[in-house]
Image (cartoon, rainbow, N blue to C red; front, side, top):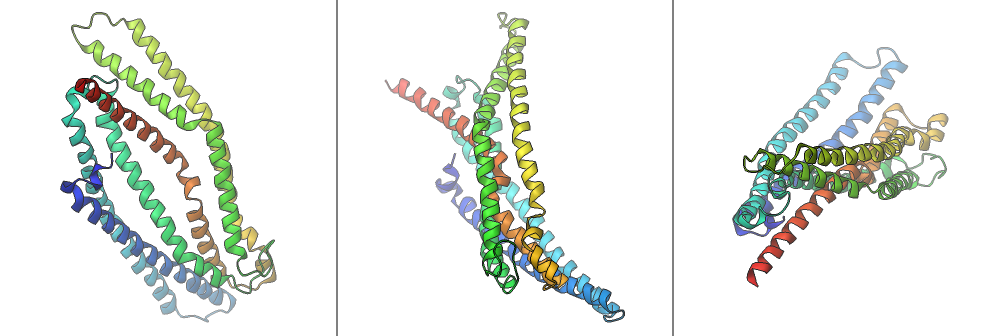
Length: 331
């Protein structure tokens, strides 16, 4: 699965490609920091204009908007180019996996679900790995950039529960994020979501295989009742999956909705006392959200992580079965 990063043929694409994607993430985070600064200045400008008529000029207002548009244009351009490059990066990763599977497929094809492993799971694995990997690195970069900003903005501001402690906002974001993440990980474990996803894919593979066999003119032994029985297994596992994810999503969505208010709760004493301007409040709320969102990486990515674990388990099992085939031949 990871031959892409160790095979000489793919070293250029794997390592330099990864470096290019990570560099673009760093640039995007820097632009995000600039946008956060813009929010503070813009809302202070709005507060000044609303508090005292004609205190700002229309040129100042338009100039502020154009500043945001220029930052947004750069961000969008980088995002689109990186998305295009990443598509090529992922396909080459998939190609490196498929090339090896092709070389052993004359033996691997005897394994149940071999075609699905090679055709479907390879693209799923590379796409999910890239998505989770880049989002994790981005979360780290955001923390490095926004934690000092949040600390600087919270100096001298009273924070709910923590009072005037300068680390109150960062600690609040940390406790809220870790608490929610642990809650959802435990919930996912209790509901056995990884196992359900794995079982679902195995049932689907068995159903696909019986349909392929039934298409063969020589396969006269496949009865319609056999196909129906296998499809009933598929139906049962899907319905069980829907039920388990219903319970999981109740907890997940409820937490994420409550998450919207978390920054306002911690800032309640400062807002009521009127010790922050509208611009500073917007900067704090946005920086708090970015820090909180980065700390909630596992929480937000958990459904995708469950899918990745299932795909990895199937591919790993497939490769072990291929190794066993070679071992038997060697004997």
